[in-house]
Image 1 (tube, rainbow, N blue to C red):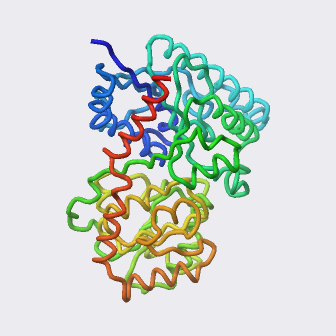
Image 2 (cartoon, rainbow, N blue to C red; image 1 turned 90 degrees about the horizontal axis):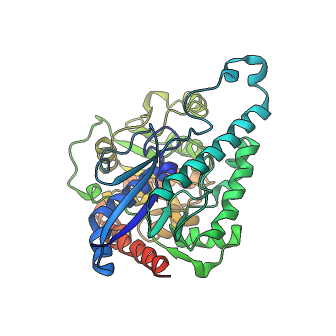
Image 3 (tube, rainbow, N blue to C red; image 1 turned 90 degrees about the vertical axis):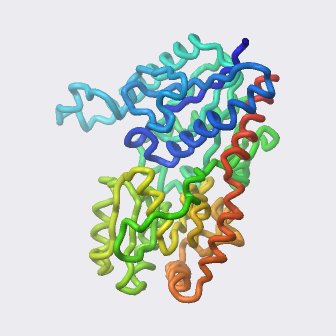
Length: 409
């Protein structure tokens, strides 16, 4: 029997601290899980062929346990510019500060990544290749494709909030990011993760809207399972994100400083050496240091428990392509405080409390309302109704239809 092969470039999901620790990691892992459970039988029904999922991944970086062993793997051996064994010159202070050496190392890594990815692609006859992190600072998605290709467009945050994001990166990563953006034009189809994301792809990067399909990310159904007893002894508000400025952590902290001493603020956030020390110092300045907690990376089961038992998720980002924590909170049935702009307004309008992300007063007022007169039962009902937008079977079939459209073409 013939085989229909779908390739997934998983390397972008493995960047930034290992396997699946960033939002792109969770997005790609859920994408693969959906293909295994729903996409494979649907594609087999549509094509009359056996369906195989091939995962192209960075060699030496763990694959998430929930998909490891369930897919065909193709390791890409080339080192990245920031990982792996450091060259001798990085240990020599006199030349370590020379920016041209870092640029040379990055360019060599790009060439190696391109060569090794193309070598792996040549070994496997794919019907379609999907690149979930086609536009992501520090990823390596530019190479030649021997088959139809689908690329995911996540957001335009890097450009739209340039002072918060892009300007913090070395110039060679900034230049490569814009090469990635140009490379999006080579895709047969582009998947945007929200209507707001689709609009940004067209408005900011000039991509043709008739080439873009909107397919929301899937959110695991385990979030709406009956909650287990809370892992924490005190009630708490939840913030779940990297602590970067565009996620608005300082305004959340300032708003929380106006809440009763009986409550905590829990940040599910990486122990980022760039931002964590300043946030801890800010907690001290606000007088909330004894009830402010940063968890670092935590296992999925603990993550779900923290969502299900929170007073509310507070996620007033300045801009999002989707806003995975908001969707997770809606599925968990807890109140959501989020921004009245961008994709977060799109997915939470009518079911969450929408605030101006630049207004501490509005964020604080929303948090106070959660503690006073908020109808949590209604929030749970509306949130879980909205969560059908992110149902894995639904979104996987939409994605599979995109694959079929380019494969037949």
